[in-house]
Image 1 (cartoon, helix red, strand yellow):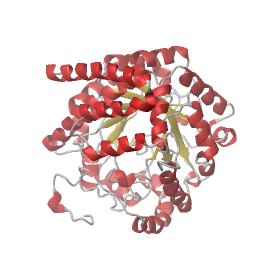
Image 2 (cartoon, rainbow, N blue to C red):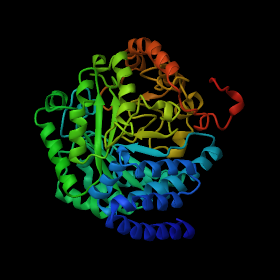
Image 3 (cartoon, rainbow, N blue to C red):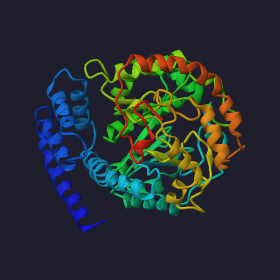
Length: 474
């Protein structure tokens, strides 16, 4: 870290300490001060009008996000707020984004803003429809390998790391060590919550740059139907402990054909807000793995419902005091597919570098290739050249909505199946998606042509060679 970088971070830290103390005296009156300080730290990264809109919302007593912001000030330990602003604001947004963009130009390939990796394939649960449930205690990344992932990522400009598995908290001591040794990064783990204890809460408060996303799906009945008896009560108990200790956490929700009504109900979301969840990460079920059931895929009408629901629940007047996004139905805000290193990629517990956590194919491994080498190899470059895979960003995925594209990329690049149990032929996988893709296409077109959408020309995949594209697409 350069001396000027260290000085900037130290100065920002000192300013935040004073500002948070000031805000804490009278949060309802002084919270605007925190926004002013944050906007000053990352000046130039976002249009000034964005911060003006935020401040206008915070001044409005009827704005849901004013109460959401006050909840954060009240519910989250100040050490975590400070360190997350430093790691996500100064490191990731300011320095990281600049470095990522420079490296995209330098190497003419995708460079990720986020890396997702699996510390272990092991899990203490066996959820229906989860490929990791079949893996068992087969694979682990060593601590040195995880450390190398972060150091290589930081060199490219990546300062945000998510962990899944398996159950990543089986390796919670190593994860906390990784957080401690990399205070310039933010870390988050997807977890079933059963291994959350007081020591972990103490460690999260101490390092200040680690958050959780707890898997939960609606009611006790709808949750435990997929996750097993007693899972719901254990997850809620973990939330209570995290909330009591003022730790930062949210929820991770896989919505399926069977549970969509439960995971979008007011009762469920109100309970999650009450428990202290500050964000909700929603995922469309993907039929991945040899035992996957395509009947779990939501129907086109359910997907349409999710698209409309996610916009209602984020409404500043009628929404919920929790930030919620849907990786499938929010594609228009990020220009379609974010995988293949365009925004993120995945490293499994065997070290295979995969374009997406749901795309279990690879042509590189961290034990034989560097991260940069993987990003420039055929599979990731196929993503780079192909994105967006559809100009209708409600059909972003090369597997679920455009299965013919994943078939083509895997076959042409020679990528191999990385399923840790049974190799999965790409035709078999994509065959589970063909019917949904066919039925969803006209519904997605109707929605896309009905609502206005953000222009995403500046979402990087078209920036380097704009002459190859038109406003309407390729």
